[in-house]
Image 1 (cartoon, one colour):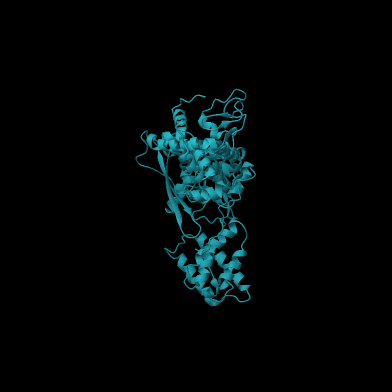
Image 2: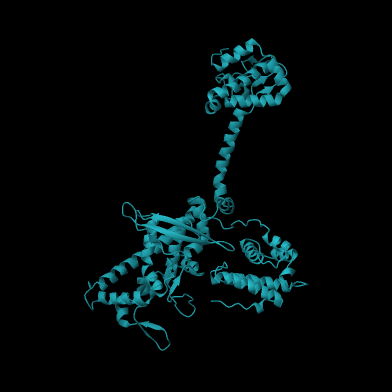
Length: 541
């Protein structure tokens, strides 16, 4: 529940009332906002916009007084980067649907802004492995601890433990912990809790690692689990924080292994949500489903306690707050739900790492490992995450170079490289298609051995010269290759004759249509016989 006093916004009464009416409409059922956080975020923006309006020489008194110029000045005052971009998008989306605004102002608010790219780089391979190892170590230790104590509690509840023995007293403490969130305690005069001595003696102490951590994750351990979920599924922090408890499908797998359905919800900027379901199977160690199985087991007691108090709070990431005092705003004390702002700091402090925000982890996973969008469109994935990433840019260098070399090689085969000449050179040697000026230095054969390439490759050789004597024969070859196209079929023709034909097309373009028509008219019977033998592979010098 939140209270918002629009008298505090330093604008005129009429504008205050307009803001309040639209704000209330958005908060109503079906209005678009379904969380207190959404209301607080917009209240912050409206207050900031109101202060900006109050600073103007002629402050707006009504919505109609908010002009495109005023909006553009406010937009230019926003900080650079994603923070300012989000403010403009959010407030513009909130205000521009109000019919009291002028059409030019609504157009200004709807104007498309340049997309802000992510500035955080992906983790380097060694950084990624360091984070994963730390998260696995912390969560594995917590999971094994909770599993062992859960088994102890099960045996105690079944009556399999000798009464009043140390193990029985531990079981009694665990039962109280599962039902109340606390090991049995007494209250000091100061109001603080003190664990009863008989339990301290068998548990080993009254610090968290001896008491409530036996059945519940700590804040840092819950964050370690969130890290592993991000690494496994490429989700963002909010989606993981608000993830509902996965359910095992009734039919399961053909081999009896559990298949879990993940129901994911991602907030969009402005109004709207993105809903998605994924089915993941637990088919063995290191599978995505095995992580879900362990997460369900490690959070089972905390989830049972919270959902017993409020069945709507069926979330996966629930942990025991070590300081469940008045500052704990959780709806079910002493437990916390989802990720809090200081969860990362707590985890980094305990692991000794210098920094690994979940946003960078998600970018690393989706860009470098999964290599596919994670609840984004393909365009957003490419533009915001992939293209600005230095590791992607570095890895693309040899790929681009290889592509350029391939394109160059292809061009050398499809673009005329023989030189055009007016007359024949005395030292040249005639071939069926051109004149060769350096038979022993062919680019298609070892140097000094003599050319072994097909005569059709003469048009792709820089040692070849084409002069007017060759024009009729080459024009006839071009027409002959074109007629083979319909006979052989596109695929076979392209493989055998496509490149020579393309080079002749280039020659035709360079000589011009008039020269080409004259050349075709000048074809002799010798030219036809030469080309026929060449295409049949029977030509010999």
